Image 1 (cartoon, one colour):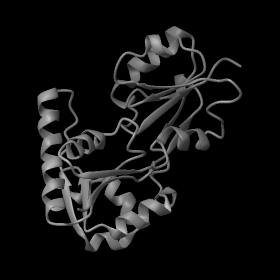
Image 2: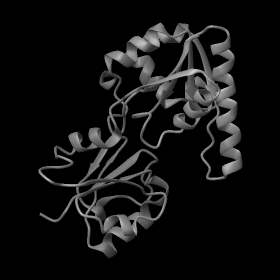
Image 3: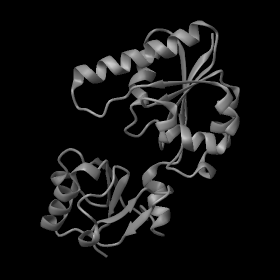
Length: 227
C-alpha cells in the first residue's frame, strides 16, 4: 500500500524547502495542490522552484475554498480525501503540498485525518513555518530564556490572547488588518509585520501604525513583550 504525504513547502522561497520534502516529491507519482488550477497554486510554484522535475508528474488541483462555512469545508475536505484515496488504490504514492508546515493551521490536516481514518498510511513532512521565517527576516528571536510563545489566528478574536505573557504570533491577519491594528493600539502593543515573507513583494514593518489596512493575505505579525 502506498502512502499519502503532507509536504510542507515552507514560507515562500524554494531554497527553504527541506531535502526530505524534495526527495519525497521526487519519489511520488501524484502531486496534489490546493487551488483551482496548479498554475494558480502558490504552494506548487514554490515546490516546482525547488524540484522542477515534479512538473512532469501527474498534478491534480483540489479546491480548498476560503470560507468558514462548515458544510462547504467538510465537502471540500472529503472530495480531496477521495481524490487521494483514488490514486492510493491504484498503488501510487501521493504528495499533498501545503504552505509553511502541515501541522500549523493547515487545511491538509483535515484531509490527512480522513484518509488515515479509512485505513491508509499517512505521513507528514515538516516545512519551515511562516512565523519562524518572519522572525528571521525581522532579525529577532521569538523566545528567549523562559519566554512563552503563543500562536493566534488573527481572523478570530485576539483580545484575550494579547493578555498572555511572552511573544504573540498573529497569523491570517490580512483580511482583518484594520481591526487587528485597532486591537493592538487599544492594548498598547506594537506589532512587527512581514508581508509576503520570503516571496516576491516582501515588505517589512516595525511599527503598527505603518502597517497598511489593506495588507495582503500573506501577512504575519509578531508582538513582543515590552522591553
